[in-house]
View (spheres, rainbow, N blue to C red):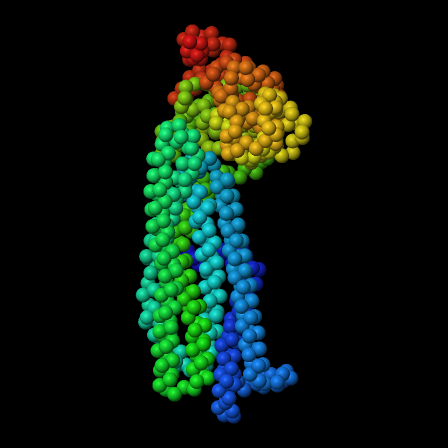
Length: 588
């Protein structure tokens, strides 16, 4: 339960005002609940027409209060009082429930935004090492369990206050009956208090199978085209059916335990109450006192059941909270350095000095790479697949940190800058461009929200987007669907280029940005890029060497090392050179 108390302390300090309101409502609900119990005494005395010394002491206090307020004492006034406090008690219960839900969703917002903030302060390695099923399930399901559990904690707190109030009345009237009731309830209900390990196990199984289910669903839907093309629909459906059934078994067990505890506790409580009332009858306790004690017990049993049920639920939610904490801790472990210096551009070059890098658990991708990217020039990185070209760019963007060596901007270490301020001055076109399920306009403005209409026209014209925009039903306002599914590969690539150009970056990174283009579109993009070489620094990764003919400097990479470098024209003339060999192969 240490985890629960840790969470509770953290969130109370985060939401003190909401908790004060909740506490006030809880006390109010408990007070009016107690009044409904107390009101049973005068109702019983009036119905039995008791007089003088036969009247319960509570009835005397009640009558004196009504007379002091100038209200006639009668059965009707007693009924009106009982009805009023019952209605007010119901209203405070509704308000308490609202306060619990309000806190629950405040907690969810706090947790979800906090998790999102943590993971987007981490380097890219966090996302490459994380399992998408765990991430998605944590955001979609597990964090809801934490919010629900916190609501349960607040409800338990409210219930404990009510238990104390409801116990006060029977304890005052008949301590012996109350003790008998509590002892009987403890004996009968004791097995329900020893389910912690079982509840935790079911909660963990529920979380783990939920991770697998979410991952399977995500992979199945995102691979729809591949599944259809291979004719593997039945195989994919069967796989989903299998993991869904595994999760349903875990979920059924978890929720059965959660609800079953309450359903079992209530009849056990009734048995305990009946035993206590029977003892009271044998001892000759008066009917008025017996009625109040029984009514108090009947009010008390569901509240105690709620406490036991909440305890079981909280024990089962702990695996969800542990998973969320693990995600946040992993993100913190991979956190980017804050870097106090804002990036305001550079004057000379970006340099990689003796840089080595390897992904966690894998062999080195780069080995002692020296590389210089001059300002307002075009630098090309070429080489076979897996040579390390994209890794170089990822390191330049600060998405990863080198294992050895340094990345310098005008002699200053990249990590000394605020990396976000640096990336805001970068235009990036990845090999597989990602478009959002938004309109063309919104996809473009995503990179430069303050861009004007003329800026949009300029970027679209430069990226050769204008032609296919005319064919779209609503032009710039056409919705693109998930990942831009309504566009061809070449159209997506051109739109991604326009998005990068729209922010008018200091550094433009093109990672195979023309690989999906036809020859005419490629020539158009090449001309646009060449026109920008004096305005921005361009880094080009290319397999199609026609893209890099106008590069100021070319680096040829092989197996993580620079094996050749120089101007394109010079390297192309070296008969035994790597670049010349690659040109001959593409010519063939």
